[in-house]
Length: 219
Image (cartoon, one colour):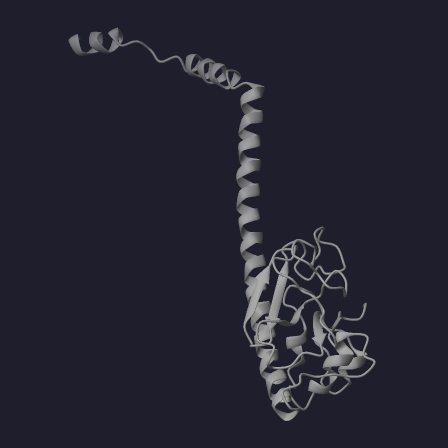
């Protein structure tokens, strides 16, 4: 009997009491707070995906530099066979025409003429390069002795001389000169080293006598 009385003294649990409490707590989460949570998630997503895109862009710039340095090996071999002169084609109006003597004698790897940041197919090694499309600009008329001058680069906004501060590559991400969208581009120098730069020129790119800048032909 005593044990039964103790059980009766315990308060009964009312399930409705907990349901009301849960509803009240949910109602206390205001619309403003929901908006703040959504905004925070949006900011974190933008930072995450922006970081991935930035890393991808840097990787493509690095791969582009490697392309140019591999092309330099072919250019250097050509220069050794032609009194230190890099390829020159009289009357050339595009980089494809000027660099055509390299293929296939000095390189059969035509994928090197395509920037990794551009979704273009590699030119055929069995057809003249002059009649195909590449992604790099070429300073025709330079020789292996011009160590600190630019020999090749990503496609530029025009074929004119550039003073420091003037645009070399696209500032909008649109053509011309947009191999890397708005991320600038790469230069290959006559001594074989490569470097990257933003859209504006950090150094002078003056066309000296006998040197012409040839961009790729339009697609």
